[in-house]
Image (tube, rainbow, N blue to C red; front, top):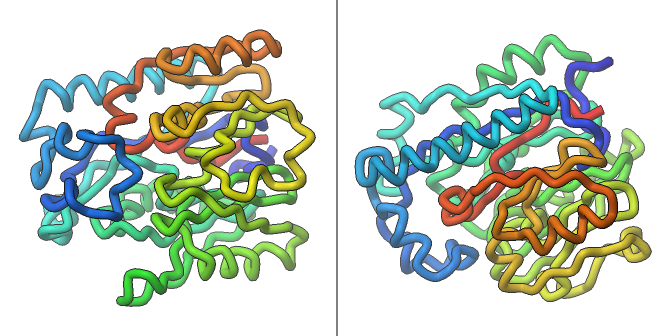
Length: 316
């Protein structure tokens, strides 16, 4: 078996990078249109301009417990869980007034087949988020028979990019769906990925998102072959044509902004979600999927959930 490969969103998860809990939300976040994906009051509840560990130790400790509980569930199902190192003082200082982040491992890199790609993140406090993950990539990716590349650096103009983030990338065999709302990945990033992957037999498909949806995995989740969860109102053009005959668990736009699609398949038969989304879990259970529940309310208040908190190195 390969050591680095992702066959699909629901192929058995064997090795995963689970994020740490380090963030200093930028001081101006409450008024920033770039953070319009957050629910009302979410930015203010997360200690603007300060490291959450210092500003609200109790909340931070509870956040860490969420991640530890999730990690234990993954390990109980035989998944190897890797953790990024903490940010250094120099890395935190480099963020300046923009803040810093080491809290969602989905976006700084992603794996498609045998290709590992370092992303290009739009939000400035996240642009160095790959750094604490690099030790893992050095150890696991460099020795593996796989491709390892990085998206070109974004232009100084914030709208130019290219931007490409792992939360926008969903893998289904040789078909790759890439979302864009104007908040994260952009069309230039999608074109770059197509240039990389199409010579290797992949099809890269652009998926337009509602302007308040950060990533594609906040609107659409592939549970197993033929079964998905999605928010029709978050996808202005509807589901991609190749997914329209799948059985769907539909959710509202408000539920999508609460991250109801952002659970994580461990295998085609096991899925992790928040108890807040038991209405999704109940539907999946009726379809024969075992559902594991973990309270992820603090993680979700920061704009991500189970898929956002992980990035697979091996799903095969």
